[in-house]
Image 1 (cartoon, one colour):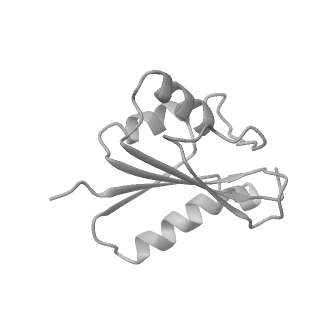
Image 2 (cartoon, rainbow, N blue to C red):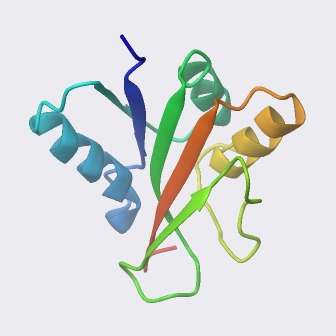
Image 3 (cartoon, rainbow, N blue to C red):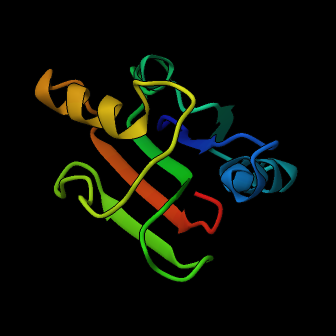
Length: 124
């Protein structure tokens, strides 16, 4: 049986649209989708690296400040594309999503498939 797809919704529900990752994770969880493991995260980089350690396919959903209209969705493959330099991923941790992906890439510890979906936010 294949490993479930790990979906990580990132955010803080008390910081306006920064909670979009959590909202998406909760909505997906309510659908009881087969072969999908859905977790919520504050975006702490060390916790992210631990969460995806054994996963084959990971999808990260987070808000980012991209300079585009709020609600614009950006998707990229973190294995083949660098983190967009024009994006700001705000975290209450100094070691967040972008740093976790960068470190995992340098240590060759990225999961075999890692996709990021970022929703442009207005409050960052």
